[in-house]
Length: 410
Image 1: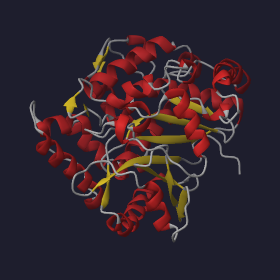
Image 2: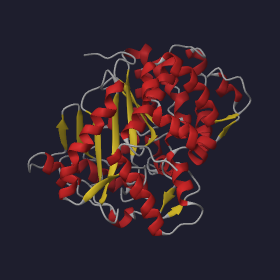
Image 3: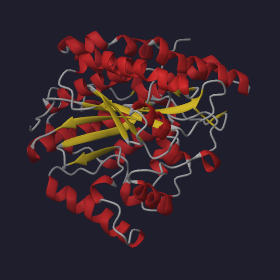
């Protein structure tokens, strides 16, 4: 069935598998999936509307909507049921799921073990080219939001809107302020590592903000053909498929008629992730409907200016100051500058008036607007100086949020 703009939504979330006591990463995703599948080695396990699946590294597992969901309001309870049903298998292995986008003390150079089963040759090719035993490949847990389109006209309108939304999303989602047991100076450190993870072949990520391309033929020529040419010398066996190599902050999936957003750090529990996805969808809808600016005006936004905003938000999240009046005007915000938190407050205030789904899911966003992003709340909980025991305690509490289905508060 062909899905048109905003007919349905696909959401994917990644979590780390960690020792229940130490919170060190545990490379047991294959064992966990085998338990769910009655002892059979599988790469995914379908549990009704939600599916568990493997990722590149054995200490990471993903849960996602089995099929595109037409009603986003029902997703939190479906994700909650899936996580509750997983607990007996987790308990057998003495592991738990750890939220946030980066493990706070993992050493990927010595702790990364790649998926060795189905499609392992793809992961081996990635490792040979990029060295996947690094934070940018094995310690960047995120949420992917898939939005459908049908044909070039819908793609153009959606792509124009998404390019504008991308730079400000980390102001809601940042959850990665710590790496190697220390503050990094960034609230969304995952985005820093993600931006650099394909540096050997930079055509895969481009400028993170996708190029202003608005039809499939031009997109394939300007993005996929360049990727194919760059990858070919490194992949003589032809293991890697070009359509899957695109690693921009939002990628066009013409094979399934959707655009996939990749700039969201995973939150402390799926209720927050789904609420943020609902907020992003509501703002994208308003832009596509030309409520605040025309599609032609949106298309004119330069990749460089949008990337500059994304870089600021990656560092400071909700505290980042946007002083690009032309960008703000595209959201009908007539100011010379404002913080991303203030911009989201305006946009969400408008969206909630017209979107009952967002209003019903809004509670986790209220926490973000009142207490800050999860990254900010982690910093407040830890203070300026902390030891490993205090770091362990805070992240143990964050892991508890998945069990209690509550936000992490300070």
